Length: 350
Ligand code: ATP
Image 1: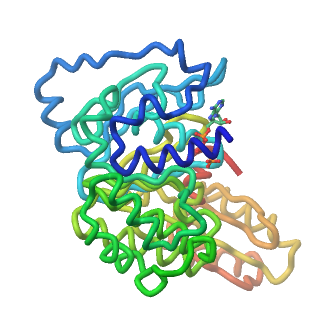
Image 2: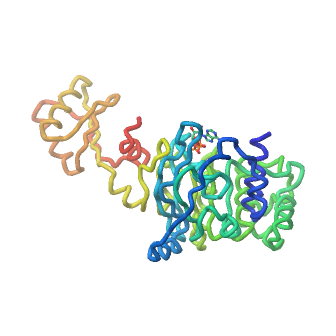
Image 3: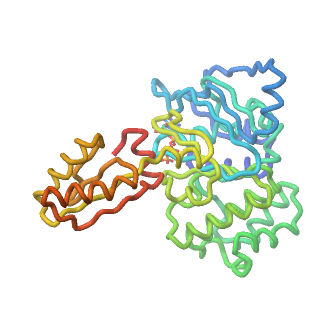
């Protein structure tokens, strides 16, 4: 019941029911006494910089009992980009988004959305569209009717309803009942609802969760289009691979802490090239490791191959050394790890 209310309230809150948020969102007892940190920006340059950022957080934390779900995080998201907010399950993504939307109170720190402090969601929520923890709609109404209800209640132009259905690829299914929609269609309708206020910033929590590869691709393409039209998109996923293609920026969380925040190009620059070598005889793998280590490269045996941390131009050197040692290589392939692997490398996770 609590969860259902929360989902509905989130959707309502995020569609412009700004005044309703504080009283309608169920209060978690552990939040009643949470100290509300008052923003005290005194540096005018900093304030100006914040006005050019969609999201800016500083020392933001959320404690549940003794556990820091989000721990003193700092990051900024520039305007007009797609920012992937990634991290494993339970790393604090939803908690962060809920703080940014004024749905829960931070334990420490400050946050600004579109230049306004998160203590005053009424100052920015009309310019923010969001979908947190999945969309909630009336099952017996069509997608079109559901959006019409939200548009009328929120005071948004009803002409936008069909326009948005078209935009999210539901133009020809708008008249079907919501309960007949596939998961992907439900997610897309949720995004359409979040777009009703014509937001400057769109915040989506795991919009690709449970979608098949085709659905993931559709949502990705939609988010990229929105960013190309000038909307800042802040989108979370527990899978970096789902967002790396469309993200300009990445904020990575792990156990409530920031692991990386910045342009995706900077993250790519941290990718360490690897040479994968396979030998005809499995027993030669250890000797390949020896050759690599003697040349100063870290190497490990994984399954039936050796992974060597070395630049690509070391591959022919290894080829020659292996030949001279009487080892026949069955495969020698330089490759870059994908960003997911880079993330695991950086966090020390397996
Ligand atoms: P997922 O990808 O699974 O949605 P997440 O990265 O969004 O995970 P959160 O949902 O923010 O992570 O949870 C972060 C941590 O905070 C988890 O350990 C979770 O159990 C805890 N947590 C979240 N909400 C509450 C709550 N209301 N009360 C107590 N603990 C909570």
